[in-house]
Image (cartoon, rainbow, N blue to C red):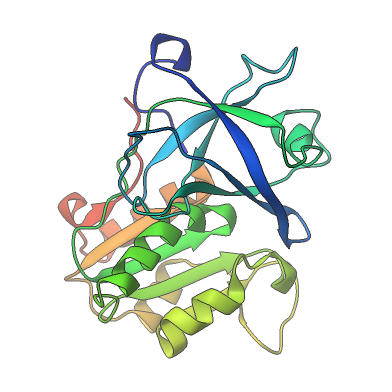
Length: 234
C-alpha cells in the first residue's frame, strides 16, 4: 500500500488507546482502538500508524481501517512479520492499554459499483470495510472475490468472507496443494476461466508485484484503467 499524502509529521496526529488485541490467523492480529472525536473516514481508506513508545513514534506504516465509519471504535487487521525487526513485529507485543499514534485517513480504494475484488494476502484488508458496509446497506449482491494466499492458514477472516460471499468467493493457494481451495496464481488464464465478463469494475490490492501482474493481465483482457480500482502513488 502506498502513501497518497504528505508525511504524518505534517498532519494532525491522534494518540489512541488499544482496547482489544486478538489473533485472527497465525500471523495476523486484530487491534481495536478508541476513535478520536470527530474522526471520519470512508470504507477502504487507511492511515499512518506508529507505536506510542520511545524509539517507535516516528516509525510509521500504512494500515487500513477494517471497522465501519459508523462504529464507535477503530479496528485494524494487520499482518505480523515476526522475522522482521520492525513495526509489525512490535505490534505483536502490544497489550490492552498501550497506545498507537494515527494520522488522518487517506486512500484511493473506494467502491464504484459491483465488480470483482482481487486480493493477495493482507491486500484483502482495504476491502473488508467495503464488504461490511455493502452488507449493511444490502448491496453486496453482484460482487465477487478472488483471494490468493500462500497457504490455507493464511486466509484472513475466512469464516466471515464465506458468510458474506458464499459461492461468489474463490480462494487459491500458491505454496501448497489443497483439497479445499484452488491451487495456483491469479493470472491471465485464471481470470479468463473464472471471470469471463470483463466489462465491470475490478478492485485490486496485494503485494506490488502481484498487483502489477494482475493489472497487466486485465489490460490484455480488455479492461481499461477507468474500470480498475487500486492504490495510486502521489
